[in-house]
Length: 125
Image 1: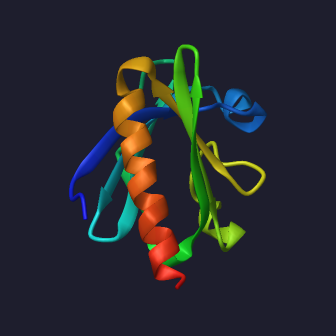
Image 2: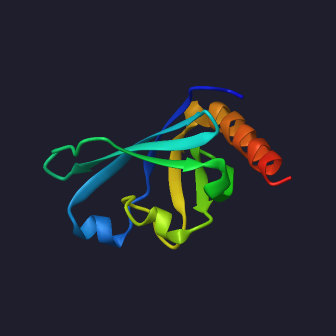
């Protein structure tokens, strides 16, 4: 297992976050010990930052996870088995969490998601 894999990302803002005066949602995705952790903080339009909140998902709680390359970066899409697991995560909508990945982190994100998907398929056998 690849311990301590860390990917910096941002979470795409939807209408509820824009109306709440949130400027951006910053996230660190960490994969360690068979769990995916999201360390999330919000930044308001007046540049006030919230404390970091950790949201963790064991491999058995993940329904699907994928990485999609794009021209200027990429995105990770995670869907948990239970939709209620996303209720406390800002920016999560329609049963999925979408992380925007910078171009410089694409290769590491691709490797990380490949590892998570292998562990996910192994856990379901």
